[in-house]
Structures are given as structure tokens and as C-alpha cells.
Length: 324
Length: 254
Image (tube, rainbow over all chains, first blue to last red; front, top):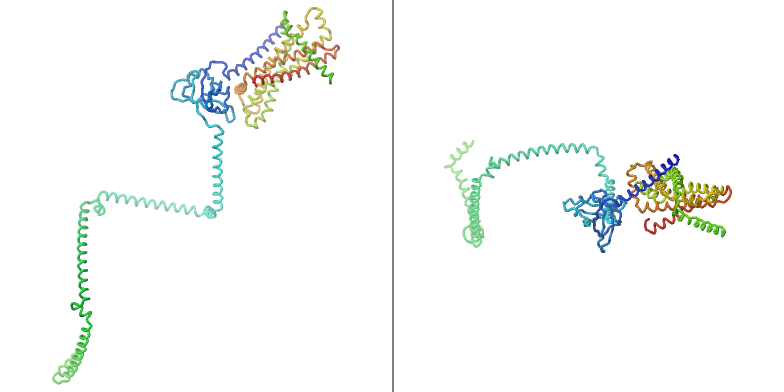
């Protein structure tokens, strides 16, 4: 009989263990679909639910807070989704929070994600409709991705061509293989450094000069900054201008004069005209010159005759002695 | 062929007639409670180690076998969910029921068969005890009640085996493993499995009793009764499983 009781205890243990496992299993399953515990219902409306089904998870900031209870078509552009949310979320979910449909992982189940609006709006009550936001679905993303892929293909093709051209360019490779080039470059940079240093000095000098000029020091400064000099210069320039004007009128008068002289010369008036233009005068002058030549020839003979004359012979002999 | 068909139909008819006594007898006064509890102990508790062992190995093996296929699709992390559904919905109940049929079906068949052969059953009738009530009802009832419990505990051990299997190659915490298993499960997965295991238990117990109760005279009759009890109850388990899946499908629970 004792054995019988012991067996009964073992049997009881077995039965209780089995029942307990069943109850625990059912409770765990039920808890996941929010069959136990206190819940409240919220709504959200979409144009397209992307394959959402009742039983899908609802998450708030990534935390599991409920499940999709029912999906109802309101009209051809609006679908109402009821969500069963845990009661403890009543103090967190606000009426302006946004709901999006997303995917659990890349290929997983669809789910709803509630994102906090953080605007301090009123807390959502039983039956309230939250705001929905449509996200890109994978198909649309793939369309864009396809476009970018094509662009990348084109770009890579161009890059390939560019690289091939660079590879085939002998000049470039010579440049790259040239061992002297770095040294020369180094030297050039040193030169450039020196040049910039000098330029710096120059700039400093210029700076001082400009500063002087600004401070009206030196002739340049006075020239540029002294208003009296500027006034004098203006008057001088005025005077130069008047002198120029007078010279101009003088030249005009001279011009008129030469014109009248030229007219007179051309029209046979005055001495110059007679000298330049009268041909009869030339003949008369010619005759006169011939007469003068004959006169001087006669005079020469007279002079020779005088020398041999005894009266004047003594004079000429003394003249010759003096010369010696 | 025709003779075989005739025999099948006759056997089925007699089995049905034999089973039809069960319900009136069960609810008739004078319940053999002590005998029922004793049978529960023998049928349920004594089968538990065997069911536990097979369940553990089944879970472990199933996990290790499924892993490469899931790895190919890059969803090896979904292993707990998948194994959980497979075990709870189908493998747990059916494997447990088959083991149960092998162990309990044969033992009931042999026990009642030997009682029939040694004319103990006839002696009971003479002494005024209802042999059907004392022998059949208690055993069938015990089998019907115990198998679901064995299935549930077997499922639990099987899932633990699966957890071990997952951790051979990867690392998943106990908590995460069971979280994933129960995430994948719904009432529509558990309830049909539990309900159909009642029917499995009833079928195994009833066929074992029928075969033993109607054993042929002679020692080979006992062996034949035990053997056919196992074979027919195993087939019955599969037929019931087919029916169950069609019914659950009808209700949209698949």
C-alpha cells in the first residue's frame, strides 16, 4: 500500500508538471498576442499597409508595446488599423506621435513603429487616431537604387577610360619616374620661399611708404596729400592752358601772314617776286655781271702797268723784301 | 484481395462496436478509480523517460539537420522559431504517439491477450466484475488522459534538446531561445496539437485493448495481439493526424 501511495505521488507530480508546462506555454503565447493584461486600443490610418496583418508587433521607440488587432478598409484610399497597446503606455503615447510601417530586419515581418512627437501634445486615449507617416517601401527604394547603380556604372566606365589614358601616357610616367624632379621641386620651393620672404619685405616697405604718404611725409606725400600744392598746380595748369591758347592764336596769325605773302609772291608783287619769278631780271643781271668781269679785267691790266711804272716800282720792291 | 478487404471491414466494424461500449460504460456508476490511477501511473509516468529521451534526441537532431538549410538562406537565427513550430505542431505529438503506441499499445495488447488466453477475463465475468469496465475503460481513459501530458512534457524536453542543438554551433541564451520559440507560436499552433493528442491516446489505448480482448487462443495469439496492436495503432495515429490537419485547415488555423 505504501508503494501504491508513492506511485500516486509520482503520478501526481508528472500530471502537474505536464499541466504546468501547458499553462506556462499557453501563457507565454498569450502574452505575446496581448490576450492577458490590460490593454487599450488606438487607431492609425494608412493608404497602403504593405502587407501588415493582425498579430504584427507594435513598437514604441523600439520597445514591444502591443500588436495589430484588426485591419479594416474604410474606403479605396484609407485603411484603418487598430492597435492593441499595453495600458502602461497610456502615459507615454501622445496624440501627435507618428506611426510608420516598417520591417523587422531586412526580410522579417511587417510591424508598426510609433515615434514620439516630443511636442507635449495630449496623451492618446482609447480609440484615438494617431498620425501616420508613409515610408519608402523597398520597391521604391530599389527603383532609386537601380538609377544610382546605372549612374555608378557610367562613372566607373569613364574612370576606367581615364585611368587607361593615364596609364598609357608616357609623359606622365616620365615625370613620375624622374628622380631629379623631387630635388628640383625642393629647390624651387626653397626659391619660392626666399621670393616670398623678399616679397614680404617689399610689402612691408610699401606699407611704410603708404603709411608715410597717408601721414603726408616726404615729397610724394605732400604731392598727394597737400591741398595747397594741388591748388598751385591747378593754377599753373590754367596758366599753361592760357599760354597754349595764345600760342594757338599766334600760330593762326602767322598762318594768315604766310598765306598773304604767298599770294603776293604768286601774283607778282614786291621784290621777292621779282627775284624769284621775273626771268627778264635774270638776263639783266647776267649782262651786268659780264660787264663787271670786263671792267675788272681792264683794272687788272691797269694794275700790272702801274707795277712796272717807275713811280711805283720802289714801293713794290720793299713789299717783296718784307715778305722774305 | 477481396478476402483482405472483407477482413479489414469486419475488423473495423468490430473495433467500432467494441469502442461504442466505452462511453456508456465510462459514465456508468461504480468507477474503478484506483485501477484508473494505477493505469495512469503505468501508462503515463512509466512512459515518461522513454518519451523524454526520444523527445530530447528528436529536438537536437532536428535542429542540427535544419541548421545548414537555414544557413543557406541566411536565416539561421530563425532556427528556434522554426524548430519550435515543427515540434509543437507536428513532431512532438506524432513521435510521442508512435513511441506511446510501441510501448503502451503492445503492453496492453499483450496483457489483455494473456488474460484472455488464461481465461482470467472469463473468470471476471463469472465473478460478477465487469471486465470491460475494469480492464478496458480504465486503460483507454488513462491512455487518453496521459498522452497529451506526455506530449506536452515531451515538447518541453524536445525544445530543450533543440536549445542544446542550437548552442552546439552558435550561441543563443536560454531566455532568447524560448522567447523566439514562443514568439513564433500561437494558440492555433498549440491547441490543435493538444487536442489531437487526446485522440491519439484514445486510439492507441482502444486498439490495444481491442486486440488484447479479442486475442486468439494459444500463446501465439498473445504475440499476434501485441504485434497487431502496435501496427494498427501506429497507422491509426497517422490517419488521425491527417484528419486533424484537414480539420484545422478547415477552421483556418494552419
